[in-house]
Length: 62
Image (cartoon, rainbow, N blue to C red):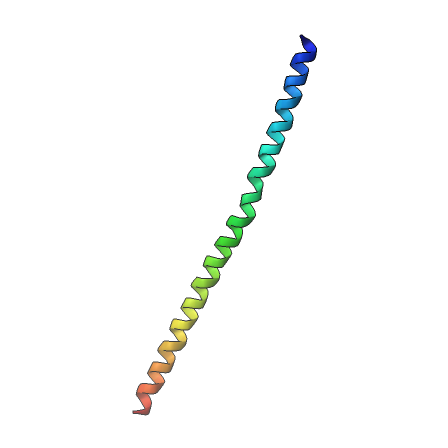
């Protein structure tokens, strides 16, 4: 009985370790998505600033 219990416990701990390892794989993807969103937001702000500057300078030429 003890051997069966030890075998089941070992199987459970091994399975639990594999599940935990799989859970951490998604965190890298999430991090990359967050960085991509941040970069897109920064680029959007820069484009808006440059566009406003160019439009202001174009208005001064007329």
